Amino acid sequence: MWRPTSILLITALVLIAAAVVWWNWSVFSEIGAGMPAIGWVALIFGVILALGIGGGLMFLVFYSSRHGYDDAVSGANERHTGDPPGGQP
Image 1 (tube, rainbow, N blue to C red):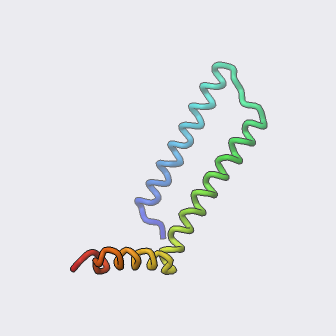
Image 2: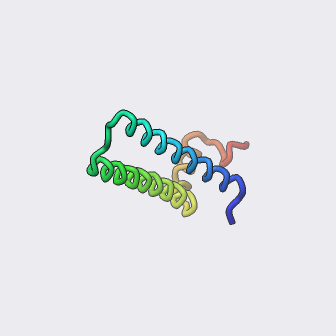
Image 3: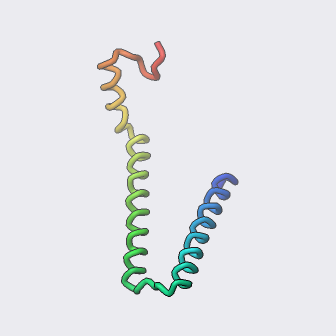
């Protein structure tokens, strides 16, 4: 279930993105500079690619954390420093 803070954050981000698109469209329309179709294609492809890479990397972070791949790294740190897990004596 979606929490109210998540809904508020997503709504705010969508509104900010819409405001940026509206401002960009109005400014470029006023000065008579348009973007060719290949520019729009490149922009859409770049945004989708950036979101895909960011989402994929976040997936890998959570996947490695939940499946124990990070445990070996924390265990190596404990062997070198002698500190117990969690940093408490």
